[in-house]
Amino acid sequence: LRVLGIESSCDDTAAAIVSGDGQIISETCRHQHQVHETYGGIVPGLAADHHLRNMPLVVRETLEKAGMRMSDVDAVAVTRGPGLPASLSVGVAAGKTLAAVHGKPLVGVHHMEAHALMARMGAEDEVRFPYLCLLISGGHTQSLVVHDVNEHTLLGSTRDDSVGEAFDKIARELDIAWLHTQDGGGAGPALEALARSGDPARFALPLPMEKSDSARSLDFSFSGLKTRIKRMRELGEFSAASRQDQADVAAAFQHAAAEHLRRKTRLALAHAAAEMGVAATCLVASGGVASNQAVRGALSELAARSGIPLVCPPPRLCTDNGVMIAWAGVERLRRGLLDSYDIDFIQRWPLDQLKRMGYQPRA
Ligand code: ATP
Ligand code: FE
Image 1 (cartoon, rainbow, N blue to C red):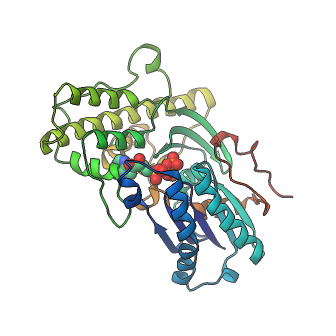
Image 2 (tube, rainbow, N blue to C red):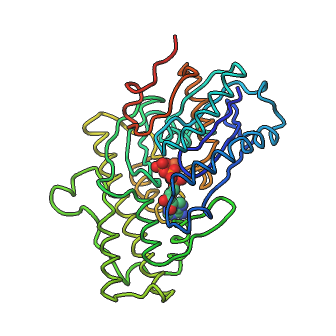
Image 3 (cartoon, rainbow, N blue to C red):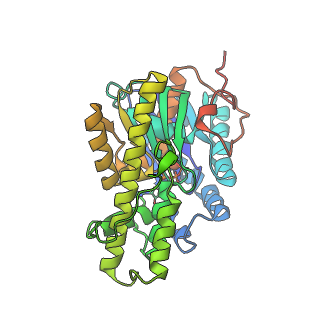
């Protein structure tokens, strides 16, 4: 089984071919970080323009690297949502046209399910259902029980900013330049790099949602940390022109964010066990922020205490990529979850509504 996966939900144009046993046959990703950095965030119109130009080249390059033609591919998987409408439509149009013209099965993939299933690729024995998954990315911060492919229960989600957004906004508040690496870079990795030389205790920040009722909630909140750091800057408590100040604030934020994620994930594990009778076999963290070492450290400590393994995809596969879409395609195909050639993208699409919105297994 060889599945071509196509991703264009946000600012990365990506494609990959993955085999049924979880081998990456080839992959291509064109980032747009340089395009959007000057605006301090993703500009939807620009992102769509770049997808439109890059998509044919990315798909062709992926086939060429694999030494394959479309006739050698067994199915096409494409991100159907959630994401930016104009970006999604480029990938969906490309994917379904390729599938229809070549008579291949089509799988419309939920982007967040792909992040959640990524950890199983090549590790299906370790990452068995049901598992607890923490999705920590640029657009989402949520904990969920993954009962099976297509079956997820949302436990907690952010009440305001996503954790990735918080990393990005605080990097901007600290005037940290984006990192440009082969694997993409961006604001989060730049903040992490700087925090390595920082002292997290110098500007210790209060943890979010530690008071009264909110301490028991499974939800997350990150805007308080952002507001706090903004205020500290206004009050002159640190200077963004000082590299040591930058590093110390970055370290304090990163520590608070990691600790908040750890506490809420601990509650989610306990909730799944006590209220749902779900004994998670594994803790999975995926999405861009799961490549952060401080976050991984906090979560691996929690997993160890809970007697389960922590599994995170390698950093390159935590952020958006074509491999995760192809792999989600493999997982869905195996269960007969195919889609028709006339599917549209779905901009807003809660992960626990996979069955109600769009996905009906084909007879
Ligand atoms: P979504 O999947 O919710 O639609 P997205 O795909 O844009 O969002 P990802 O590509 O999974 O998000 O992750 C990008 C986010 O992860 C950005 O906010 C980025 O700053 C953050 N990020 C990436 N690497 C790191 C890191 N090492 N430390 C902290 N944050 C990071
Ligand atoms: Fe993503």
